[in-house]
Image 1 (tube, helix red, strand yellow):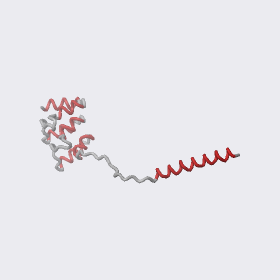
Image 2: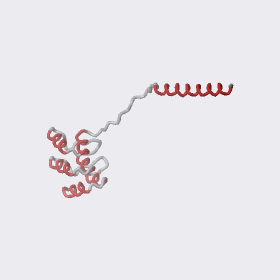
Image 3: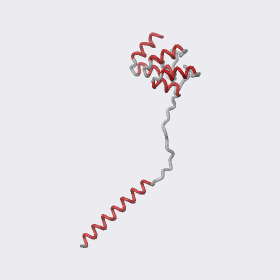
Image 4: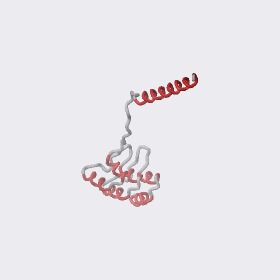
Amino acid sequence: MKNSILAIFMVASIVSTVSASAMDMATVSHDYEQTTFKSKVNPFCMAIVKGDLEAVKKMIELGSDVNERSEGMTPLMYAARYNRVDIIKVLVEKGANIKARDSKGYKAIYFAKLSNAKEAIALLEELS
């Protein structure tokens, strides 16, 4: 009988300790600020990355600069990187600089080659 009472007491102690720990963990307050990962790429270049041709055309119509850099890359570099051939055509038609280089000296065609964007490579070679 003594062993039974001792066993019940131990089980009850373990259960209450585990429950209390779980409650403590559920109510722990963290003193750190939650970080959110936001893209620093501008909306114009994000539309290019997504392949949204109509949005790109509309943004150009509303004044987006076809040569404005975002995160060091031109819109043409983004279009080349993501094989957005129709967008490349629109950007070039609207004055995108095919010979522009990023801070490391790379042109748009480099980014097309980096992602094996064959159609973009062919078009950029043709336009150069």
